[in-house]
Image (cartoon, rainbow, N blue to C red; front, side):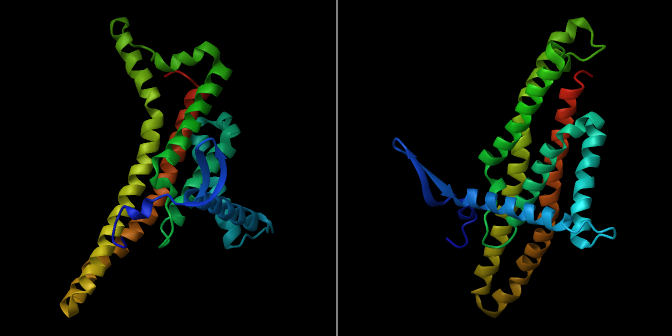
Length: 250
């Protein structure tokens, strides 16, 4: 079980919360790590901005850089009008980043390796775009599916492709994050199991274990980069989708 690469993704009930009929709703390890991520983010931001020093320290600089990074990303993708969605995008970015980084700590749980979590986040983005797009633009929101300058004889096909692309956004948005995190952690677990197996094969096995050990170190560094990139990709796609709601049309 220790070398099973799938066992690390198992959701475990920690304690029951409420029972509705024959269905018991429990507080799981997934919920616990999401709560931990919220606590970590809160401590990071509150601790980083508490002093508000003119010459910021490391923690304050990190908090300010995070703020500026998300603000710049949103402003460049959706314009100044998109800044009204800054709390939403900032929350998504920091939440996903915290979950990804916490999941890299040995013996922890990576919440973003479960598609139900990433799908919920992506659906929240999709519904925000849909509701705000119709609220702000009314029926003009449908201009999003009708590119300008398209010949009339191929317009129905293009509209169909645009609608299909729009409806598939939650799928691609969620699967991208889920698949990358899942694949990375499985790969790490597989190479880590090679170290254990080879180490039990005597002196030459221990020598041979240096190669998968080096690969695990390299993959861990790569996963640190992937943890940030996937949070960034999720955030920037959110900004692009929000821009469609603010400025529908091509």
